Image (tube, rainbow, N blue to C red; front, top):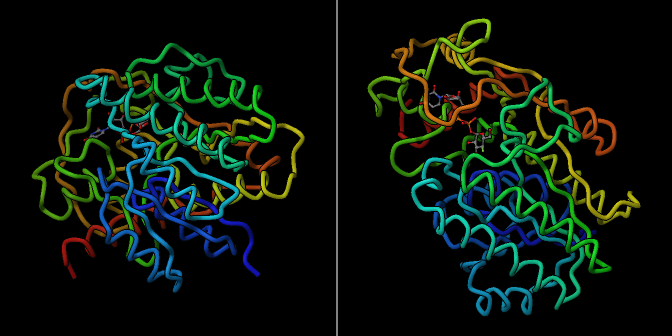
Length: 342
Ligand code: UFG
C-alpha cells in the first residue's frame, strides 16, 4: 500500500530529483512541481525511469499563487518539500531582489496554501551557510547562526525563522529544516545528476567539466588558508545520502515520531575534506589527470566548515553511507553520460 503523498516543489532540480526517487523507493506517493527555471524535463523522465513509476508532474511557478493553488486543489498530499529556490551565492549578491522574491515568496505561498488546504508537514532546504565562518568545528545545530554574508544566505535564515514562527502560531503545521553541507555526486544509474547552466560555480561540476574537456583548467581558489594544505575545507555529502535524509524527515513527521513541531538537523558526513584533497581523490578514483592551477582566493569563501551530524544520526536515524570514492565516481559517470563520453 502507498504511504502518504509528498508534493516535491523543485522536484526537477538536482536535489529534488534525487529525493523524488528515494521517496518513491520508500513507498511514498510523489507529485513533482517545477517551473524549469534551473532544471529540465529530462530529470523528471530520469526519476520515472529509475523508479518505474509514472510520477505526476505539474509545470508551475510556486511564486504564482493562483497557479500554484490549482496544484493543491488537484492533488491530495500531506507533506511538501520545498526545493524551489535559487541557490547561486554570487548571483544573489548581483540580484538580491530576485533572490528575496523567489525564495521567500515561494515559501510564503507554500505555508499559506498548506494552511488553507489543511496540509501538515513541510521539509525545508536550509544550508550550512547559516553558520557563516564558525568559531569551532564541527558545527552542531546549537552553533550560533552568524549574520548572513549574501542575500542567498539571508533567505535561508529568514525562511528558517518564518517556519519557526508559523509552526508556533498555526496548530497542525509541522516542519523540519535540513541544513545541508556541500551536496555532490549523482545517482548511480547516471540517469539524473547536477546540470548547471553556463559556467559552473561549484567545485565538483567544475571538476567534471574540466575532466570532460569543456573547461580548460580548474582554478583552486587559494592555497594560503590556515588549513593543513592551505585550501578550504568543506563537508561533501553525497546527493543520494542527502535525498534519504528527506525521506527520514518526512517519515518522522508523517508517523508522528516527535513531539517537537519544528526541528533542525545538520545533514553532512562529519568529515572535512580540502579542495586539493578532493581534486586528488577525483583523479585517483577515476584514473585521470585534472588540469588545475592555484588561483587567488574567491571573495566571500569561508575557510572551513564541517558538520557534527550526530543529531541526525541519533534522532532522525539517518547516516551518510556512501564513500567519497563512490560519490566522485558517480559524479564523473554522470558527466560522461551527459556529454556522451564512453
Ligand atoms: N572552489 C574552487 N574552484 C572552483 C569552485 C570552487 O577552488 O572553481 C572551492 C571554493 O573556493 C570552496 C570549495 O571549492 O573552497 C567549495 O566551493 P563550492 O562553490 O562548491 O561550495 P561553497 O562551499 O562555496 O557553497 C556551498 C553551496 C552554497 C552554500 C554554501 C554554504 O553551493 O549553496 O555551500 O557554505 F550556501
